[in-house]
Length: 159
Image (cartoon, rainbow, N blue to C red; front, side, top):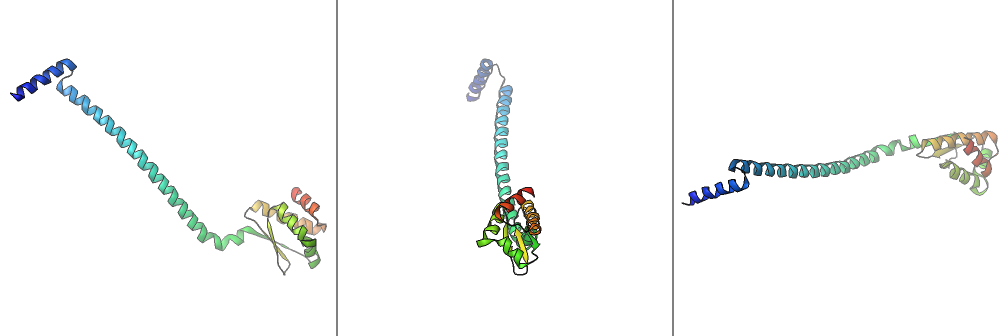
């Protein structure tokens, strides 16, 4: 009896809804499949974004580690230029009274200067263009022999 009333109910629903049982089942399955596909796509995008973010973090860590290990032994070779000073007198003019010339040169050229006892001046900067400009300007100043803050600014601008 229960089976008959269930079949009657299904027929009434089919008539009212203008869907057969199979059509309703297919429509329901299609809707569920569409929802599941959207949910799966959403989860895949989230997982992909998370994986990309983790990969970027890991890649940065690897690069930083490589830079730490590789850079230390080669940094000096690629960040320092040297200029030979012909005499102690020229070295004294480069330094200037109370170091004003050397400070002006460092400030204007954007490099650090180290003068050693052997007559070598080391120009240090990570910026190779600034370092080369400083090297050429210093060589010009040494040839010219007029080394003072205003002349330093002028020569660096011209170089």
